Length: 259
Image 1 (cartoon, rainbow, N blue to C red):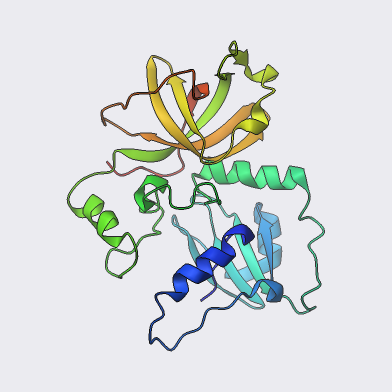
Image 2 (cartoon, rainbow, N blue to C red; image 1 turned 135 degrees about the horizontal axis):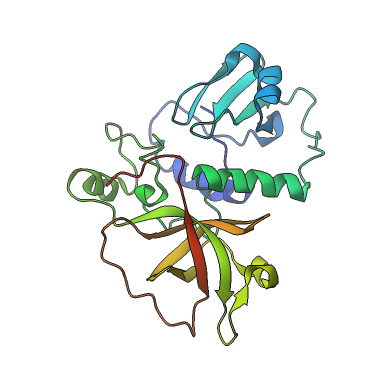
């Protein structure tokens, strides 16, 4: 089994998973030096890289390619990560790893696809369904056990999730003790960070939210934010004196959210 996650979470994740090994005949190791991950976002590039290993479907899925593994990430698209063994040893560096434009483009594509990425600041902040992992086929309700399973199962079988990750474009923002600023004067754009609690104004609706992921697009800042969903009773939005207020436009998700 190969698990791909941000380097900043690697140490804590390994330590947590090792608690569940018990007497299992399994080991957990850091394989970062032995694999190279390439992101592809276009049909031609993906076909050239993996050929007949193209992965089809509407959920995140994976399969073996001739020289690695292909993970289809985005529903209703052909975007994928191709994971290949690092045959050149641990000193190989990806020349594009510091390409800010490429990183931002990938982040925006993830947001458009409704794919959450957990960071240090959001680790442990959300129940899996809040990140729509059930809609993405990322939760098994027949396997266990794991930390938080009871909460996840209860939400699935006995209730419903009142807060879910949704996609928004920011058109203006008001920071504490400042006047509202339109998006083209959004000098605080870098201050919006994953895990940050904000107040969203969407038309006549005002609600509290927590940022999951955020990136600067050509038409403004886009984000995934966990907030009230459907007919859930709105929560108090808090005071504008202690949280940023974002005027937003709700954008469509690439998959249906369970009611």
